[in-house]
Length: 519
Ligand code: NAD
Image (cartoon, rainbow, N blue to C red; front, side, top):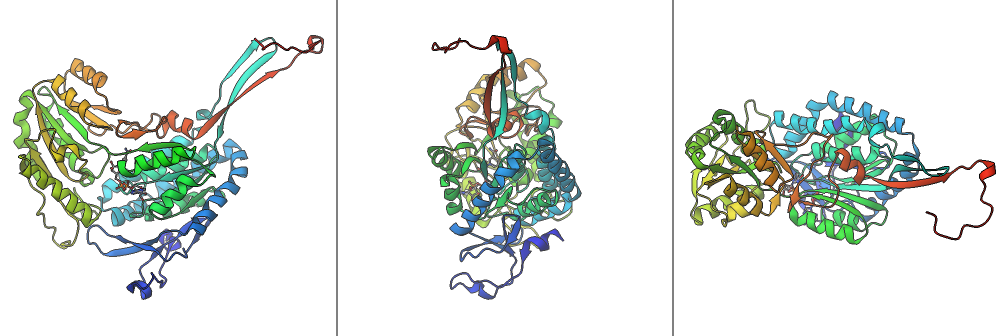
């Protein structure tokens, strides 16, 4: 039912292309509280990654449409930022319930456009929902500070205030969670929000926008535009936009960080990863191998926190054949099929890229221990599937190690000692996530203290922090000063005003001008 509100089947023209009489559904823009058809002449196809059928189209919003969206945000900011914090809290209390009520429908739209399994898609929504639930604590999260009597009759206090129109630019791999890291946090602080979802998976975001409207968010508080580079440049350059939250690749993230910062905006940019799982020989073998396999191949490896690199330390090297056996047992299938463990990659280009990175390992002397390149999925022969792949004998100079693969591929390196493993992880340019598997507390402590990575798991393969903490990332995986959600998220979306006030009794009134610096 919700979907029919958001997409219409209307004939439309794309220049002289053959789409002119198409009845494929088109994705709307959300401007000033209305879901509107774009007047753009440029459209992109959205494919079901399991079949490569075109399931919808998304417009590249025109400059006028993008300007209308940001103007709507600017107008709405005046009243939304002055709306009582309890009213804003109520909107998000209703919102979290609506998301819970519609979790299955949201998950279905994710699986259709992104390809991940339905169970995993529900997890995608659920991790975003947790951030929305956390925004409902805004009445304590946004408290300022006070210090009474800093001098006679004088008190100082701070307000944490919204900053204005904020914008978010999202990637394809978490169609619910990552948009939900962005606009709920920004809006509950009193900002208005312009969101550009990934042009490859916009459907879930549109459903989320409709639910937010149903939860009572006033018109203009959230606007949604679609597009690629022009939309990104518009966001980086538009003077009304004060802050940009970006999640995606390094190529886009570094560009957006630089262009946005140069224009005086706050930018937080979460980027690529190469996450290492360090396996110590004293680890619980059964647990560790299952965790490694789940974290390497879940979501077909298209997670920024996927454990895509294993370092087997000392005698843990001998566990490799068993690791391969477990990975082999995973079922590759379309995400909506019962029992599917590993769904398709997002596009044929992504599939080709992953296969060529596997081949580069072979060419550089590594050994493919499990090869998913020729996987066939019955009934889905045109899908972008790659089966679980494990590459052994990998060394740090190989391309399959230096590049983020973003597919169901685990590269395996070996180390003699924990120190060697730490040094390997710290030499890698990325610092998003890592995990160590051990039963020794001292080993775990040494690793967590010495490794230069934002998120560390001890016997936890995907240590994505809950929203009362912040999602971090260091070195090549993050640019900016303040991270997503948690306390850092509140800081990112607010600014501080300090008020110093003096209220003197009548008989203490100043009798002459004080020309020296007050001390
Ligand atoms: P992407 O960078 O291709 O796209 C992200 C957004 O940037 C999209 O909205 C897209 O339209 C825009 N974009 C793409 N290329 C651009 C360019 N050259 N200039 C300006 N804008 C551009 O990323 P993706 O493929 O959608 O997502 C996968 C990447 O995201 C992986 O590298 C993954 O590690 C990363 N990621 C990181 C995190 C994190 O928190 N660190 C989380 C999820 C995904």
